Length: 172
Image (cartoon, rainbow, N blue to C red; front, side):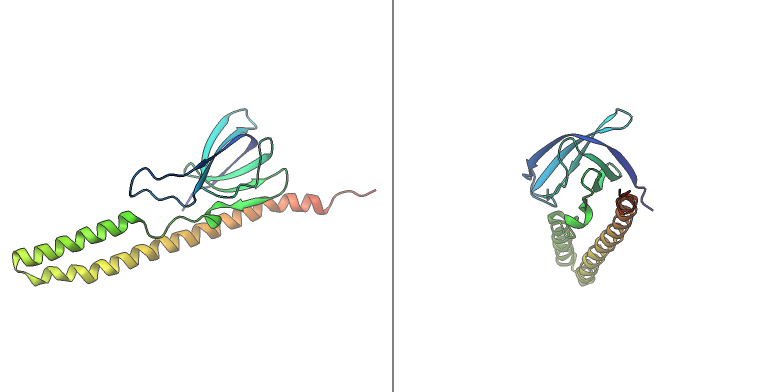
């Protein structure tokens, strides 16, 4: 099971960059990335990179970031009450260029081996490659759906106390 933890503090700096893939196999979820510097309540500064088009916080806002393996999954702006599930807004890709390159290379190797060795049973690899590609897509889709649901649940739990405090405010 994934381990999530919250990093809360003041957003001290936000820098926006445009993603430009440097290698042919590099693909990003979004065309933009944000570099966030958060000063925690203990005084420690932490840097996170988020690939997203939408960031509901500015410098000086109090935020809480949901982190899993050094990746920000969601952000809750404690100043404004707004939040975003990055795993839902900009989900990871199901199919990557490298996957296609590996499938083509293995298929080509199987055809060459079948022709060179004169053994047509090597061609059984081709339908197996299609099954492997579908299994890869399904596995990534299932992982994405389960992670998105877990992040949504944690984001709702974190936003709940703030909504309760706002609802039961004292009125004179």
